[in-house]
Image (cartoon, rainbow, N blue to C red):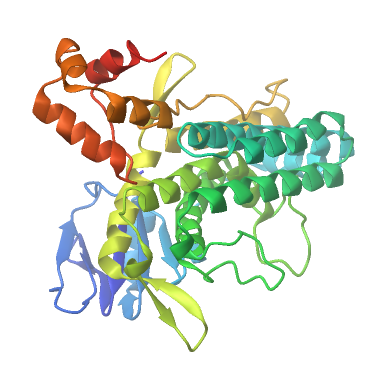
Length: 402
């Protein structure tokens, strides 16, 4: 995943000769900069506009479409407002099978359950990863208890109920590990203000919008109908594309990790947002937002072994959308959203931090850890920030752990 994010005042996307020219907006003292690409040479796989003003020419939209580059517009609070995707393939066989499955209670139930099984599996993975550093054992047990109920459900409505109860426990744990100064209470509220009521929720929205853009593109490439979902309702009053939201569920953990890591590493903090009293919402400051987008890019571009290959997570999203299409057409008898399993491991867990702080200079010397390195490790262990250890140093510390 390699999106180009354009923000600020006066964003321009136009065609000069045969080249696409993309001009970033002006912000404070930042000078406007432009990029130009010949056809089939643009290194970015999507363009995201998060701007206050500017324009996109018709020729530029045609250039992007012909070069298979989608264009997304994001609101200030991270909400994905619109998307312009390259022409999707016409696959009547896929869509006919999708229509039939939506109206088949048995198949609809099987797909919805597979989606939520995967989401819950990743939810427990994230909480287990967090429990290595934070005291959330109680919340982890409560989440596991709610998750176990999924095995006994018999309808899509019951699946949604279990998913909702698991989510409540999950966000309880996330609230506990985040500093109180961030004012994060929960993800869902009765007034539907979770889209910008605090800096954590706006960050989650922004990460989810990037995920949504990846899922939208995958759905378009496979030829599925985005408005017909199996888990989310297809209500007349909703503007959401149900299948897009369905296929986000197994991958929301990627966005959640980005947000957690951003606040842990101080890439984002409360001073990186400003509050507007006109609508009582938080907004990103521009430079921290760009650092956050780079972190999202890094996480989605990380690799995992799947079916004998090393794939990036954005490629896995496409593979799962394609797998759903094959399942709907009867080309595959199984549907699996759980695999591949992510590798989540902390090198800064509480056990290692305590060992570093209790390690004497003489013991460290025997382990081959120099005095200055021990000092640096102690500074990191006392800090709230996460840190990484060289594999050799980690193994040495693990050798003396009880």
